[in-house]
Image 1 (cartoon, helix red, strand yellow):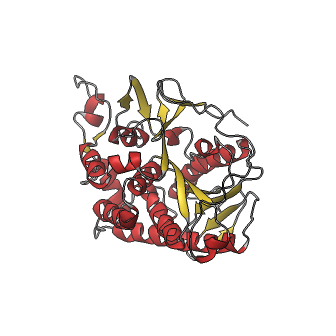
Image 2: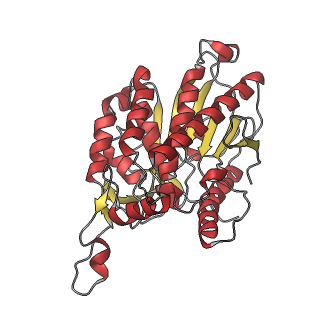
Length: 363
């Protein structure tokens, strides 16, 4: 097994050197939900949200099911779109979190052109997204003789404005949820954890966590350049394992490890993308000691979405479809976990188009 990337805190922040990797012991039992099935098993929940661009609508639906269940989420970690969804949640008052997520999906959702899905994704990758990123100049044309160099293919001023509009960073940094946003140090290869209980999080941290290499320019924070952590560690699980606890840990992932291969160019490209990210998750989970942890690995699995460009498909219909998958699968998982109050085994459950989904072990 190849070594995992090192995880570090930025200079001046409290370090979390033991990310992952020790058994848990019980903590306070008084921090649980006050109603429904969870009243009989009052434990807190910690959420880990992986990256996957437009697939992150799944996270929004899962949160809606968690919120409806009455569980109390006290800690969250996010990478890339997972960091954005987590910030939208933590940066809103409890009674407005669902509204904020719906506003975000509405703002980034696009109408499907008559020419179809593939044309829409190709257009996004060529011409950008009107609510989030537009072509840079010279951008890709820097390859031509005499052109000056550029740092990325797209500029994200609109994405930054959207984050500022929808996220109350004062509430995020002073609210009831501990939030950790991860990013990749472009020069050292370290996965760096930015945590709101160590120092205030800003829009720059979200821009850093979503800085897809080449597409978007690296983000400079405290003299260091950062990129999207999905390059090395797309599932930000280890920051949640820096302390003991009996919290229910829900790790939401957007790419599945085991799946039949469709032997076409698009099918192989889609499968290669899934293996890159799902393989990371499998190694991360295997590298962590989850003994005694109440852990569930929740994976988006959608046979209808077997397309290499799916992570850049912002079609309104597809976003709503993924949101509904997340809601239905998480609602089913919470019913299952509530029926076994002291569940303490590692597990992985992949979900399809029904709430029940289908089972799978993490590799």
